[in-house]
Image (cartoon, rainbow, N blue to C red):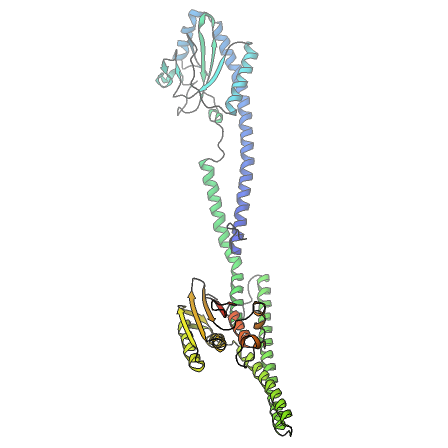
Length: 480
């Protein structure tokens, strides 16, 4: 089962492995860094909030100790002087704060303030919360913070821009008044929970990934290019045994591979040449004794013995001719060129139909194909002649798609049993009792046809035709 996410090329798989490794390393390092940064942020806020509780407790004690009639005088003087660390006012009621989003940092700061104030001031009623500057109103909830004179709170609420939360503590005083204390934290931005992937971090991550992709594609392309060259050389060797050897250069591994490939191709050429010479020599040498035996058989006195002897010699002569035809059919030492398949099939139809007198019908279109002309013509001639010999009517269908040319040859003959369809591709195998109306043939046609088709990178299939005969299907790749 194919996996859609798995690249088909080695280059793509290398890039995928590197991307997954870099992405995994980035996620792991970013997670560890974020965890450490968040822990250090909480530690800093914890220390700051505890010191803030001590200062806030001193401020509360001071204003609580002032007589009622002096509180407003002291507050006015402090505002005129620019305020203190805290913005302090006395209200006649508690100001209800708008609800703001919480978070671990805010909850920790509020808890530390409460614990510190209770430790310094004792158990008493208090309200601790946070407010956004735009929502905060002071002086009995009547004056927005933004409308205060700048010098009144330039130390306690000096926030530019007004976006970070403000800490607010409210406590009841004698006489039904409420002490209102507000301040901005020096680390106000730390109160916001850190986002997992901010815009800046996303930009950095994408920049790193794009850099890795480009460097990976460049490096892997250079590293895998020799493999592509080796694959092309192997395909050329399959088409032409006389193809030039690979250049033996580059890193040691590539040089060793090129040398091994060149030695292999040279040995294949020698073996093929030796096989051809051997078959040709044997076939040629057998012709002379067969001819002598035929002459001696003609001088036999017994007609029965003479006919049996000559019949055996005819069979032997046919085997010798078949061996020569096999060697000639498997000899593909020719250069590939562009072939018009439609014209080739039409020429074979006209030539064979005249000699055999069979009915042949052609349909479809195949177009041009780069192949070895004589070898492909021999392959198609064997198959069409075989169909004509065993049937009355033959249909040839041509089809072309983006990757292959398909040639189908169907007949209405006796067909081939399914159990024998693979066996008929073996040399000298004939199914005479089940297929032939006549005698003849050496059983090499299908064997030679399959060898030629496979030498072109294709395949040949046998199945039953619609008319009950045999359907031969050739599939030839366009780019081989």
